[in-house]
Length: 65
Image (cartoon, rainbow, N blue to C red; front, side):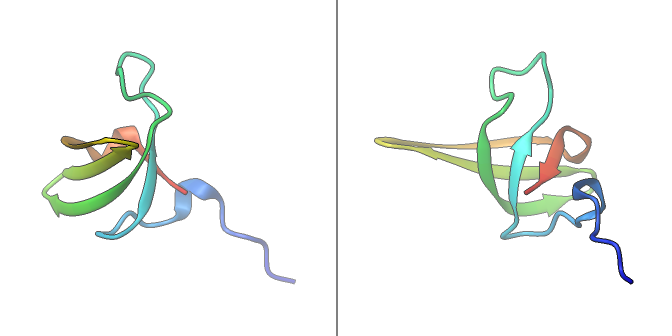
């Protein structure tokens, strides 16, 4: 019987939904969409009501949803 993949095993690709997992970041717990990846960093688009914000952060701080 196949076991479900762990959340950490999901690849982070452009178009993926991710959550920020960094206790030191003001974006900790925010959910966003990966727009592009360059090296070990990803540009993540956060949308919230009447605002949009594009932030570049290290991939190691992101968790695929």
